[in-house]
Length: 234
Image (cartoon, rainbow, N blue to C red; front, side, top):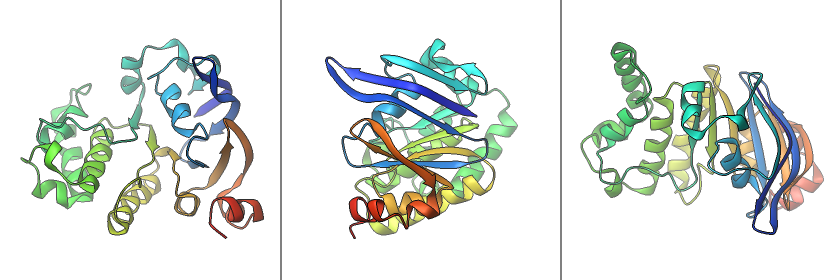
């Protein structure tokens, strides 16, 4: 579904991503792990067209993605859950969720998907009329994921969904991520919690200093001595 070849991202004279190549198959969850500053989030920002890469090619379902303006991506079936959640703070939870479906027209389908999202996140149903800016960090993360799901994406890009959350919230959010993945959605997961990311994904890529240095099936990366020493605290 997604083919990335030689992607480079620069900030001024600093190269954050140094010509990386990887792919994501349809229906697969792939984890991109690495230390803070490795270039993971910069990669997702380039894929979602929030910044222009310095070079490389990104093909999504056979189409060159970098030729498209950012606003076209939702219509193509790509949704990003950004690092830091990015909810609309002065809108209610319900309004935030409905904003996720702004490019869709079938009201019956939208209402059905809204019920499904609220079923995944009962807390959001309780907070439906509450301003998003007053929600807890975990609730905002639920809202950001729910908003992305409301666009009915084919490819879901998740940027650090566990960051700054209490363990019980992380557990709940990853239960939903697993459920969405098991229903067939394609997911590219960027996550600093390497153990968690590798436990829920099929394959993984390890990024170091803007380069991919290791790739394998996730279950094999979990037992790799280098991964265990550098990312699993062993």
